[in-house]
Image (cartoon, rainbow, N blue to C red):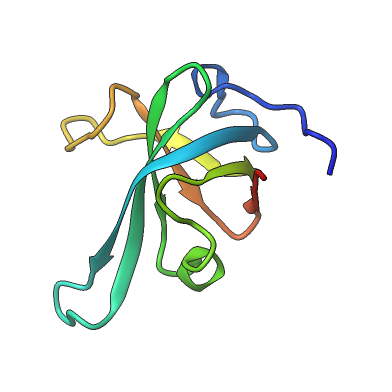
Length: 113
């Protein structure tokens, strides 16, 4: 596979929905439903690009089963067409970014070999 045109995390734009980023998963954990500890609610991640810029990301309940067996700690991926939006003001953030990535229906994840 030819290397896609990669956008750095610092250059992501909320008005552009067709970006591709190359990132390594440096932390991944599962969040389970508050009401049912057996039901996976979301997958939360911290991603880092080649410049060392980190961003928080999540896989929502609707997309969990598409990505849960692909995403692993320490692996590098191309992520095409993630949703990129502002985090809520005053909310708890794990990186210095004002934005967060979400894996949505259009998102495509490819492992970098």
